[in-house]
Amino acid sequence: MPDVSPKAYLTTLDAFLGHWEDVDAALAPTPLTLAGFARADLQALRDETSQKVTEAVHAQNRRDGPVFDRDQGRRALRARIVQLRRLVGGLMPDSPFAHNLPKTPLANAGLGAWARALDWTAGLWSDIESAPPPGVPVPLLVAGGYGLVDFLADSAALRSVLIGLVGADQDLSRAIAERDAAWKSAHSRLVQYRLAVSAYFPLSHPLVTSLPRLSAPYRRRVKPAPPESPL
Image (tube, rainbow, N blue to C red):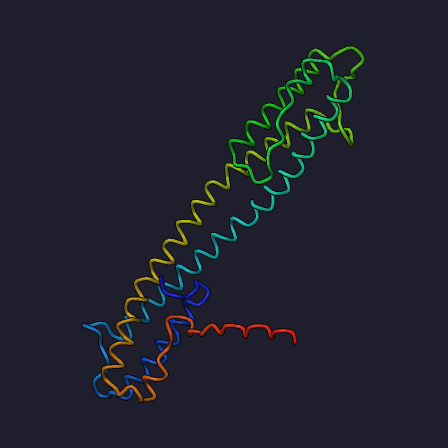
């Protein structure tokens, strides 16, 4: 792919549109066309690309809010799972419950791993309260008086966010693909345009030397000088 970032799609197209206007003025009264493709057609591609860029930005924005909620929810519930594990280990180390502790999911684990961890934790918590070992108070509460009812409510909220993010991720991927497809269509015309201008004018002509770039300028890598030998 060309070395043009999505952030530069529109500015690159604008640069070519401005340059094409100068070329048409120089070639008047016959404007430059590329096998029937004129400057107005590039403007139409620019408008289409602009729309797709905007849609991709909106899709990213729609995803950002749920991502924040997901990360917050994961951190909070992960802390509660750790607290329950420690409470079971501290209050009932010899009970069967201590040998059936839920695994603590990684913060970046997927929906499946988190669903298993949440179900496992809720099931263990419920089993302990249904048949608590001697001396274990019920309801079983961790820091801040947080209990099973709170855990179930927070788990349901996180599941809803995670499920919603699946759709948001799909929408974002689709928007990015459509944005890049629009740019690809325009890019092929920009390549044609550069070739045509360099054919219509001498290579030293200002309209050739000022052609907008489609890639970053090449920077020659300079090898550092070897260290001087000590005397």
